[in-house]
Amino acid sequence: MNIETANRLLQYRKKHNLSQEELAAKIGVSRQAISKWERAEASPDTDNLILLADIYGVTLDELLKGKILTKDESESNQQTDSEQDNTEENKYSYSYGSDGENETVYEKVDEVSFKNGIHINSKRGDHVHINLKDGVHVLDRNGDKVDVGWNGIHVEEGGKQRVYTDEHGNVMVDESMKCCHHKSKSIWNKFPFFIFPIIAFVWWGASGVCFGWALSWICFLTIPLYYTLVDAFYEHKPSHFCYPVLVVIAYILFGYFNVCGGWAFGWIAFLTIPIYYGICDFFKHLKSS
Image (tube, rainbow, N blue to C red; front, side, top):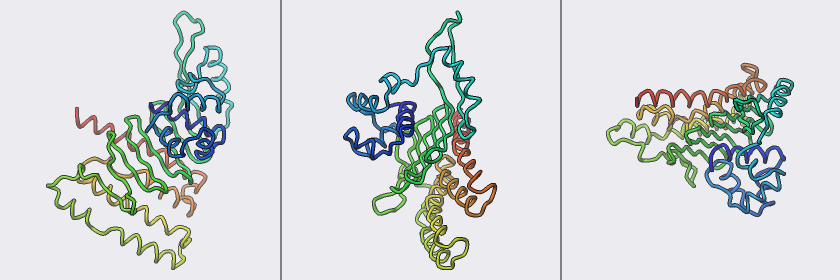
């Protein structure tokens, strides 16, 4: 399944105020299946597509290809866009026949939504979804993914899993990313960095300073930052750095300490995620050219 269709499935579910569990119960599949569909990791079969279209009240074409608009309808939508609430930004791009006649076109959307979290979807195919229930999920147009949630941390690049959390909660780095000649890198990877976040967590929480236990848990978010930073530095690939986790830390600190507008404006930090990976991608292509 392509990224656009996966994102469309997510948006339809959000629009109908359904959780992944509720939708899974309606069509008789697991919540994990719904999650994989919405991350473009798997595709629903024909029967499930028909059930989804029926639940959302759309045709299969609309579900798979997006809403089809005529020229008159799209012009009307463009006029009403300027009157929409500022909490969401929609930008449309259309093409028409040279003869000026009505022609069916497909809706393309750059969208920022704050319903049930923060959701950023670009026409280029980059997606960022953040909420307390599902965590942080970043999917760029090349198919690279970063998932940070209750199930741990997972980073995929080029269709291969690069960083992940195993069943024991350990952050693992793909061996193919390690070079045998990087002895110093091996030393840094074996360094028991996790001890320091644990000590900091206990001291911070017990001392009660700066919100105590309510905030000290973010110390654990520094663990993936450390290991991915080591890998990014020695492999000269900044895209390996778990930047979304850094943004999450910044957002939480902005909110708790009311810095840069606190919770009201701290979400802007999440907009830097696609920018960061876009810059990484730019220099990657510049280096290979």
